[in-house]
Image (cartoon, rainbow, N blue to C red; front, side, top):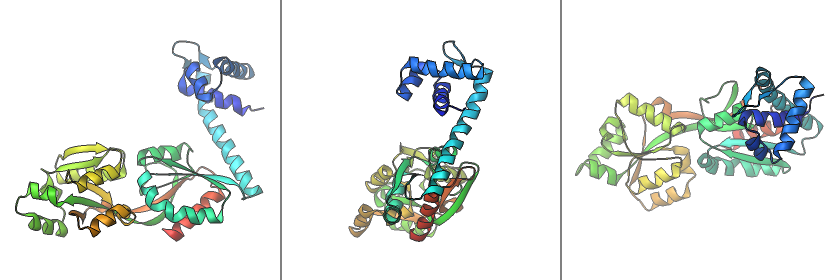
Length: 312
C-alpha cells in the first residue's frame, strides 16, 4: 500500500539532499525523517540515497523522485475531483497573478465570487510572469491571470480582455533632453513613438522576467538602442512614482491607470506625466486566464473563470 506521508518526506529529502534541512522544512526531527526513509528502502528493497556528503540519489532514488511528484499530484487532483462530486459547498481556489494586476482585477471579481460561493477558500500567489508560469506548471496554483502568450506548456487559455502597454514620459524629462522643444517633441510622440528619439533619456524598468520588461527589451532591440537604465525594480508602482517625479521614462499597462485612484487624481491636478501608445504589436495584447490541461479543473476554477469573463 502506498504511504503518501513517506512519499512526501522522501520528495523533500530528494530536493534538499540534506536530511537536516529537509527535517526543518517538514517540521519533524531528523531521526523521524531518517526512519521514514529507511522504511521506504525496506518496503522497496532498494537504497534510495548514497549516504555521502552531500547526499546523492541512487539510480532507484532518481526514478522514485520522478514518479513521486506525479503520484502526489494525482492524489491531490483525485481528492479535489471527489470533493467536487460529493458537494461543492466547500473547496479551495489558488490564484496566481502579479500584485499590481491583482489590485485592479480582483476587486471586480472576488466580491461577486465570494457572494456566490462563500465557503470556497481563496488563496493568492503573487509573482512575475516567469514565476507564475512555474507555479502553474508545478501545480502550486489552480490558475494564473497574465498576458498572452503564457510561458508554460500544456496550458488552456481563456481570453478575458484587451490590454495595452503605454510609454510614460514626464514633461521634465523631455525638457531636459530637448530644451525649448517640449511641445514639438510631445506632438511627435503623440503621432508616433520612436524610441531612438529618446535614446539619451533615462529609463526606469521592471526587473527581467516581467512581461512589461520583456516587451520593453524587445522594443529597444528593434530600435537598435541600448537604453540608459536609471533604475530597475520588481515594483511597477515604484517606477511609475519616479516617472511622475521626472526621474526617467517607463512603461505602464493601460489597465492599471483606469484602476489607480492616485493616477486619476494626478491627472485632475494636471501634473505633467504623459502616456503614449506604442506602435509595436506586442504592446497590444490580451489578458487571459490560464489553467493546466493535464490537471483536474475543479468547479471552483470553472466558476471563477465564468465570473471573470462576466465582470472584467
